[in-house]
Image (cartoon, rainbow, N blue to C red):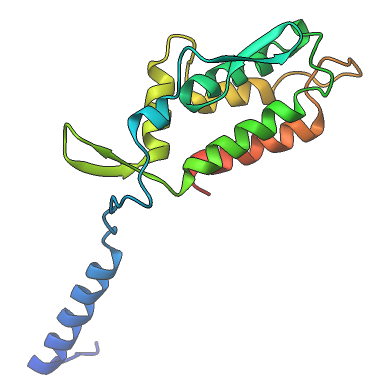
Length: 171
């Protein structure tokens, strides 16, 4: 059997190395600055400003309310004959809207903590009366059968939605 003897200086080197590795592993705290922070009003969006999207379709365009309306339209795309592009524009708008909040933070005034805006979006979407869970609702649209029907989501729509999922999951 081989015996390894450690000197005191060897032990100190090992301890320093382990401590320095632990310090590097610690997560960096989010910093809320005016340049990277979104307000709660910006995240929620205006609940009363409906805009005409197509001749018989109105939807809200900003914040959680816009995300809810967009996903509702995508989930019921077969019922909306006025959407001629098979949801490509809607899914692109959703991707662009989520991307806007990807690098943003949100300052929670009640706890005094700075969090990622995407976490707040997921939380508020879940609390919305029409939203289930953001990831699940996107996956519902992705699981819609693609047939040669003109009212099912197109492959491009599904690709945009896959990118939305990657943004939400942080990949």
